[in-house]
Length: 412
Image 1: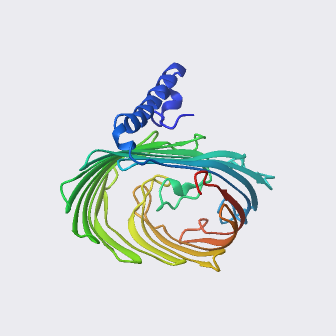
Image 2: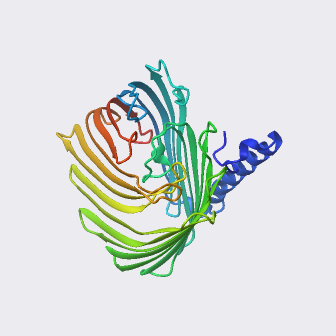
Image 3: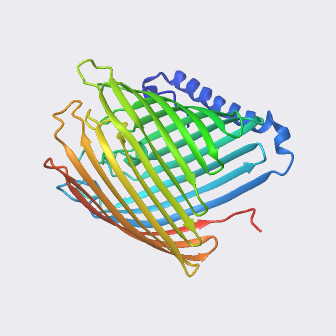
């Protein structure tokens, strides 16, 4: 398995071509790492900082309606073991942070499984890599990589309303360049390549190419404006129409001592390659508040935009609100409450457009910090979707017990 596959159609390549593709992509990754760590060695000679943290999470989860269906609800028990490691290297001009977890899931209570439902045990992967270097005082170069092999559809798009538990991998590679014109102006460009590839052919693979340009103006050290333009193209492997999206927006961020606030809005226009489909557009916005003081924290976010990936060839405009509140009691008991609401209004790109869903979820967790490197957590949650179309409602309750081990090798 490679972290840099050559596109959604790579499984249909000849074996020799695939090997060449894998080696080429690995060579690119290796070249970038060498570039960041060797080409600018002077930056790493002052006072480098190293971080090595082995970690293991293990636990048990019960879902009362694992497949989130209106009928034929099935309880599924999941036993999981997630070993991994966090590695970091930092100097005044170089940053490399690698996080990896092997996500092993084992399922029970799988009798009488319908043929369209895959409950085979899953060995997944979660990887993130962030690198940056400053070859000059005003220039920053970086490369970000994220990879998931999972059954959780939320990794494709936080605004997704898709609940199919199909195994897939999603890979995002993002090189970036940022230039500081002075204490006030900063310009940055990112190119993001995203591939989604399903293990079974009942779902459609896709690839996205996106360019993101930011022009940031710092009015004060704590107040900034951000003008952003995005252009991306979505390429599906089979019959779904490809599309092109353009989005422009202006954002404001204000930072205070204990919390920060951001708000932004703009225009999103999407056109389809299929001439028989009408273009769609919307006002896109986001609002966010984060606060942290002593042992308490709060985070609130609201946004509106289109989803990125089609569901049965259609798209929806999502309005989503997320709230998280947490507190550390007695220095040993971390408690968190989270709530999410999303309205998904379908645009009728390939359907009649009369579908509208309201999705809710609420969860609470309470942990016990046994030591600095060992934490026991219990959690419970409720998820629900209310649709105006028959057969699309569902309710799911889940219960979770988890033990987390993280040890900082370099700590004193």
